[in-house]
Image (cartoon, rainbow, N blue to C red; front, side, top):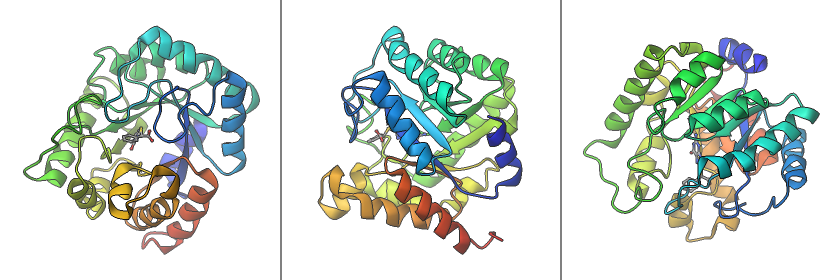
Length: 277
Ligand code: 7PM
């Protein structure tokens, strides 16, 4: 986690967060890692390909996904985080909305909580993050995974999402979390139609201006399928195109399934950024 604190101060590179879903039904790579050793092996392969963070999720958060209990989520992510930590010092984020899962995952070596609810679903999560001094990703979502894609609607998507993230940053600081430990994320695909996702991606400066590092997660997502009329397995070029533009427009962290391609995209696009050296 020290390397993350150093990075926040220097911001000298774009970070790549590799997705590690340890669930039977996750979007795209769901079920590929049926055993702990498979999951740990994939995490280590992502580190080799250039991942700065491995994002371990025990519950699918794709549209229509049903909630997994705290205990089951913990049973899934705990051994995997321990296994990764035993063999690598890569930063680990735990993708959870539960305080109990976060606490155990941090004890096992996670240095970041990736919370799609932005500390809203579990009232105890903010204090766990504050007490244990780890990083938190605050992501925008309209509704919840079960309902969010039923009929997303906004009067002013960019303005509403920016205000939400600003309010969540303030709430997190008031809960005792250091501002240096907070990351914001507009939540592509979380209660958004195509037009909303495009509006977000065309206006990333509205989010970088909040002062916290900006995470963007577009990897193989549905909006790319709407544009290309292709399944997730055929959305890598679309992912690369959007990630390149997002980095050039200020994104600091990319959440990707394909780490090798994400790393190369980040490193090239970072050089095109006006503020890059
Ligand atoms: C729809 C399809 C919604 C796929 C979500 C997914 C993000 C995340 C996920 C993100 C952060 C998937 C994703 N997406 N966490 N978790 N930001 N912070 O890849 O964009 O399965 S789940």
